[in-house]
Length: 271
Image (tube, rainbow, N blue to C red; front, side):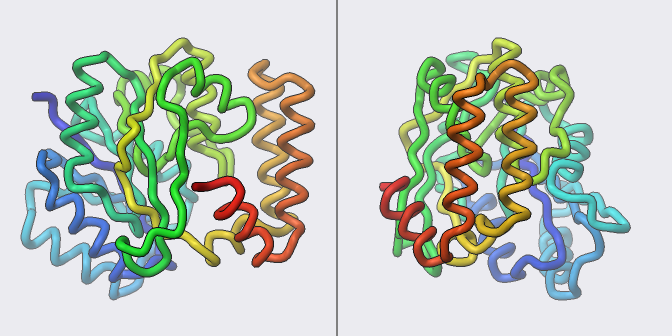
């Protein structure tokens, strides 16, 4: 069986209890990870450091921790993590989400058997407890429909993805596309002819809800979205119609009140 590195970035505004639950879910897998790469993206709070130090004490050979003196953002942190991971298969994980117990086992077996370069799964979203699901974000499973979906929306659930390290480095690793660093990476992978896929299974339970919706509003989010879609058009992946529909659509949902945006995302765009 191939070995797995799990890649996670942590910064000071994150909740130490959520981090504990997230790492805990990785330690309860039916297939153990061989390495957990933690990127401290800038100085952390004493509470977050306490959580990480406890795990380092209990699992001294499992964790590889790298610390930046200042916050650089998610794309920079993940690119650094990909460069320094020990193993070819890297599973992404966010520091406030919870992995399904068989996630790594299912992913690795499928990736090796079917020769995927990038392979993700579905997510179920919750606000407080993983048993209280508020929505499910479903993404297409086969490459043809992933390519179609990618012309409008992100075709992969980033926190569920496992990819081959050599392939991600081959296309230049993560780029600094603020808020869209993963989407832009998948677009480049599609353009490079990589094999992408998604399982029908839920791989990660994602902490979402009203806080997430507030981050998807405002002029700054509209600007970041516009810049990302402009990159897609300049690369030849988007045509003018793709660019117009996606920029106008996101601008419209970003300017409406948070409660209405919550309804749009969790009642209309989710299941």
